Figure 1 (tube, rainbow, N blue to C red):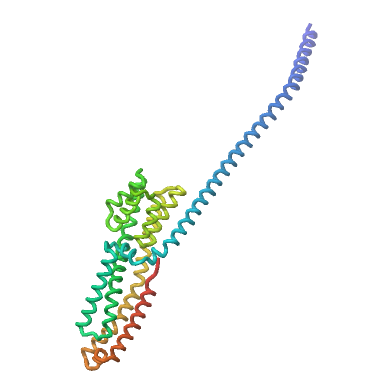
Figure 2: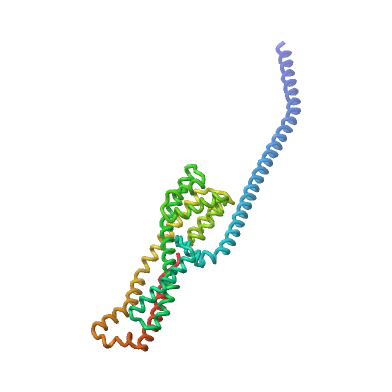
Amino acid sequence: MFGIDTTVLAFIVLAGFSAGAVAYAFLFTQMSNEKQAGKRLETIKAAETDRSVVKASRDRVAEAVKRRKSVQDSLKQLDEKQKTNERVVKKPPLKAQIRQAGMQVSMERFYLYSVFCGIALTALAYFAGAPMLVLPGALLAGALGLPRWFVSFRRTRRVKAFLNEFPNALDIIVRAVKSGLPLNDAIRLIANESPEPVKTEFRRIVDSQQIGMSIPDATLRMAETMPCSEASFFGIVIQIQSQAGGNLSEALGNLSRVLRDRKKMKAKVQALSMEAKASAVIIGALPFVVALLVYLSSPNYIMPLFTTSTGNLILGCSGVWMSIGILVMRKMMNFEV
């Protein structure tokens, strides 16, 4: 009985192993197929992911190229506009210079003032006892030189006042844009609150907007009434941002920092050139001081320079050569930053 049970048990075990082997043979093929199918599915998913990544990368590259091309086109257009307006901005006519100086004077009135100035200076030279040969020069200096020098002086002083306040105005625009205000409201804020001449220049931008001109075009025109590179920088930044996009507050903040650095550099250059300027002043004043001392010690020795025609000719030639020397020293001491 025990033997039969063992035989039956062994048969059952063998039958179980045989059934398991058969089942494993069938299931192994199915499991292998499923595993290969899973690997193929993962490969397909990875390939799709790679294609998505490649497509996204290509899109980013294409967008960057498109944006770069847009910026290049904008720069080319701006360069063409700058070349077109270079003659008017750097070497403007007299009417533009009067406008840049902030003077509300018509050309007819300016020419009238010039004639009066020439007549007054000629009369002053005549009553001072100047020779007759000096009177035409005094008339030309009074009618042509002195009024234009006054316009140039007012123009230079206005540009300096603008550069002193312009970085502060840019900082205000940056804070206004960061707080959520649109650019036109920020410009209107500067036009109402900033001191002169920044207030007038931004008021012109606001007035240009009211007649239908866009902000980029209005800011580009600022260089026509404010002849400095900083005003051109501001217009170029606004123009590029409007066409290519980007962070306006960051761009204007960088521009403000660059303008402040330029101002510091100009101050350093001026400080380094003060020794040369002092030397030029001493050299320029030395002939007058020597002439005054000689006149005080022995007037008869120096008076022929003022009482004879030969002496007047010598004084005139000396004055011309001295003026040339002063202009050369001035050109050597002034640096463009």
